[in-house]
Structures are given as C-alpha cells and as structure tokens.
Image 1 (cartoon, rainbow, N blue to C red):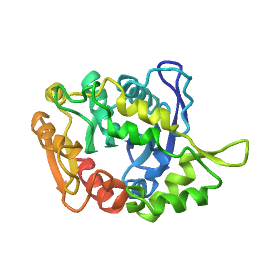
Image 2 (cartoon, one colour):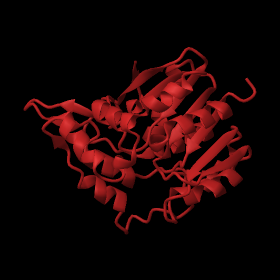
Image 3 (cartoon, helix red, strand yellow):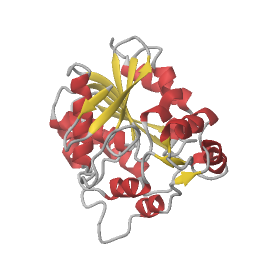
Image 4 (cartoon, rainbow, N blue to C red):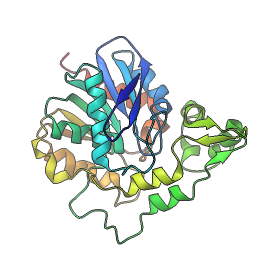
Length: 277
C-alpha cells in the first residue's frame, strides 16, 4: 500500500499477514519491513501485521535532498496509522522504529494502544554531541552499496558480524527485499549508505525526559550482550519514566535480538500486545 507522508515522501506499507486486529511494525535504521517477515509470522497468529518502510528505506519513494530528521520518521508513523484507519493500534518497534512509535504517541495521544519496543533509540538529554564522530554513521558510509548478485551479498553478510548472527531466514529476507536490481545487472542496497549514515546522525531523536506524558502500556525490551553505554542502557530509565512502562531483559541477545531469535520476541510481544483483549 502506497501512503503519502510529509516532505513529498511516499511510503510503502507492507501487508505482512494475519487477519486479527491491526498491528504496525516499525523497523530499525538501515533495514526494511520485510526483513521482519519471520517475526511477523509469529505476530500474525493474533494480529493483522502491517510493516512500514520509512523514508529513504526499503520501497519508500523519497525525494533527493530532504532532511532525514527523526521528526520526519515520526510523520511517517502517523501517516501509516491514518492509512490504517487512524484509531489506536498495537505496535512493535525496533531501535529507530520503536523510538518513532513512542514519539508519535507523545505527539498525538491515542495513536498507539499498546507497544512492544526493542531497544528504542530514546535518549538521555545531551546525548549525541555532533562535534564527535558517530561510529554507526561512519560504519554506514563504509558499507558496500552493491554486489554482483543477491547470492554474493548473502554470502558476504553471512560471514560477518553483526548480520552473520541473524537467523538464516531473517538474513535471506533482508537481502531479498533490501536490494534492488541495477541497470548494469548488479544489485544495490535500497537504503543507500549515505542515507543510512544521515539517519544515524539526524536530529529529532526523542528524549527520555519527554516520555513522562506517554500513558500507553509499553514493554521496553533490551538485550544483555552489548557493552554499555548503548541503547540497552536507555531501556530501564525509559521504562521508569513511562507511566505504564515495564522493562524486560534478554540476557543472551544483543541489539539485533528480533533478528537473532524472532520466534521468542514474537511470542513475548504477542502476549504483551494482546493482553486484555
């Protein structure tokens, strides 16, 4: 489903299956909705799952030169909620996607009925000094943008961290849906490295201190395997700030937990999101 957003962006909202109440799935920076197909299969036992491709990601049509602020990503969430009827939805978000779901609810209360967010990038005040190089952005800029074939991309990624830690079907779906055919016969990343880097560096990241007004029942999940400080360190204080927030640690997972064990995360998310139905 094509969905117009702000700044001339046209999003892609993917039907990821199921026939229950609607659930909006929001992806992490650099990925796309269909990379979450194995996780969505678990959620689809109880929900009709819709996955957003944010601006500059996946199959979204994004004009050149727009500022990839996270305020615009939040606009994308609200546009998709409106396309799905505008009423309160269940939501699953990972990293950037989780942050933008929560910011959408803060901006427009009643948007999200219940949320499961895995290491959302909702940050302490003063986080992200632009005078200091962002290592994630630096890594994104070095990312190889194209391969001779998808099979070549799959082989390279499977042999390297962090993508090599993903469950095989997740990695397959990321490659299958995250690349597009180029005119010269090669395949190219849909999320260009320059856009991924710009997203990591962009302004507009939500602040933990601003989440005290977000009353949506929210489970803030985080992994226990990444070194601190990092997104996992933000999860407990965020859960404490949210009026109806709780935290859950997965000690054997890292920031990419939804890709490493999608069955476990889908089971826990579905149980939380369907509570009280």
